[in-house]
Length: 279
Ligand code: SIN
Image 1 (tube, helix red, strand yellow):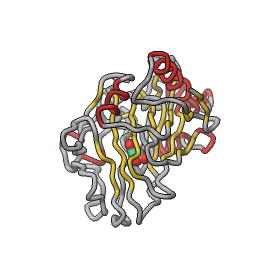
Image 2 (cartoon, protein in one colour; image 1 turned 180 degrees about the horizontal axis):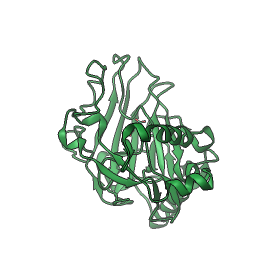
Image 3 (cartoon, protein in one colour; image 1 turned 120 degrees about the vertical axis):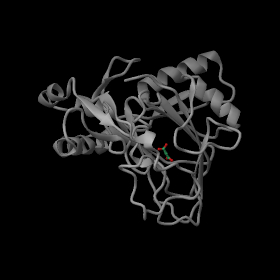
């Protein structure tokens, strides 16, 4: 196996691995690379849904994706699909976020496997939240230490959902107006990764609502600063998909963004998640 970093901040492409047939040594090397690079990319993989689930399970138990209809017969797989004729719509993951931080136990990580990709466009971007935290001033770190932020399932709930006239995809069935998505969950703003002991910034614009004990208006300025800081180009990498490529990311210390710039092309991914723990 060859491990080639794709950017200074995070992300590595691994060649020479067949994810359907990994030896114990390869599995251990991939788990080490996952810890070190936070996001891993593999090309030319040929995986059945079962094999994708088996690969996902190497990092922990599978987790059902809430609020999104699962693939028929596969409760742990979601089809992330945009059809070629779906133009000017909002797409799944098209804002910087970590996955489902509105859950008391957000997923540890996610796996995305590309079945059909546009000739160009439809990349996914990632940002390193250890790097974002490390680059803050000592004064800001002191201020954030011990602070919690309130997260809610904005896209899926009744209170903060997208405007009713927003055009959304017909190809991925997302449940909206779910009162349980409005339940507020408090997570530390500075999260310590259980595997590395490193601190990372743990807020994101899709799910974070405000700082615990403060109003939304009081929180807004600092949250906006942190969101902009977190995605400085130096903290990011960008993956150009190819058919049968697979990405695995650590949801505890990264953000990601699905770039929606491929109107007129079909893009189909199979997505699985690894269950996580309370931050
Ligand atoms: C997501 O999981 O947020 C979607 C990522 C993508 O489709 O690139």
